[in-house]
Every structure is written in C-alpha cells, then in structure tokens.
Length: 187
Picture 1 (cartoon, rainbow, N blue to C red):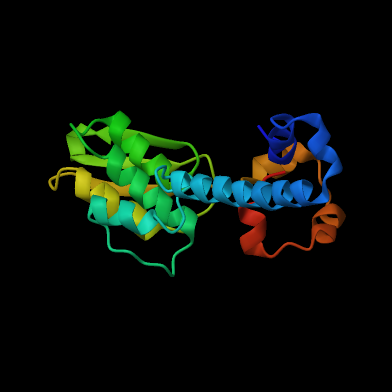
Picture 2: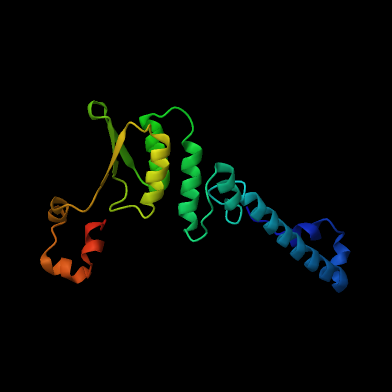
C-alpha cells in the first residue's frame, strides 16, 4: 500500500496554509524525510525474514551455525539457512524432502530403500544438477543418520518428450542450443 505522505500532512493543516510557499516548502522537506524514514524502517524489517534479508543474512547464518560465504548468490545463502531451520526434529521422508526442496527451489522425490539402508533423492522439479548441490549434500548428510547411504538422481529432457513436441531437426537447429542447454530445456 502506498501513501501520499505529503498529501496526508497537508490535510492536517488549515486550508489557508496552502497559499504560503514557506509552509509548502516545509511540508515538502518533511514529507521527503518521512518517506526516507519509512524506507529505512522497511529495510530493517526485511532483515527479520529469511526471504527478504540482505545484509542481515549473515546474522541468520551465524544463528544457524553456518559459515558466511558472501561469494555465493544470496538465494543460495537463503536456501542454506532455510534448510538448516527446517532440518530440526525427527528425520522423516517429509523432513528430508523439505530440506532438499529448500535448496533446489523445485520438487524433489525421496524414496526409502530400507533393505539396502539407503535413500534415493530425485530432483524432478528442475532439470539438471542444482547449482548448489554440494550445500544440499552437506545439509542432508547432517540430518540423515550416518548408517544410511544417499544416492542422487537428476532429471533431463528425454527423447520421448522431444518426439511429443513434433519438432523437426530444422526446428532443433534453429534453437541454437548447446547440448548442456538442450538436456535441461523446458518448453
């Protein structure tokens, strides 16, 4: 919701003050200060929420015991903090799924293989290898009991999908995709 602070301030004054340039100038200057103050307050409040934190993200990382790495993109840093917070409690398939999805920002399938003491995590929401896979592996290894093995599977564009699009080789050539771009392509 946006407000016209200048108009609100003017509404509190008697109408005859609208004729005085000095009063209008004071209102303009004070309105600018209030706008700046409101912006500063919003910026500070944004630091209290992981999804909007910027310079306050380092405090979130410190609270979660995560080393701050400012070379990583801010979205990856937020994902690490979210997964750390989500990763508290009894380890269940739902918890593992929640932590993995926090990193991938897409759907993840978790399958237990109790007979072989392993868990298979399949990234199905986004194609290819997630950019912060090492962080995902570290977070999952931290919450999954040590006696369980973890395998990771990734999804790519399948030929039957390409066939269903009805593309010809000329259409594929015109897309000018590298093989790496093609195998993770989503039309």
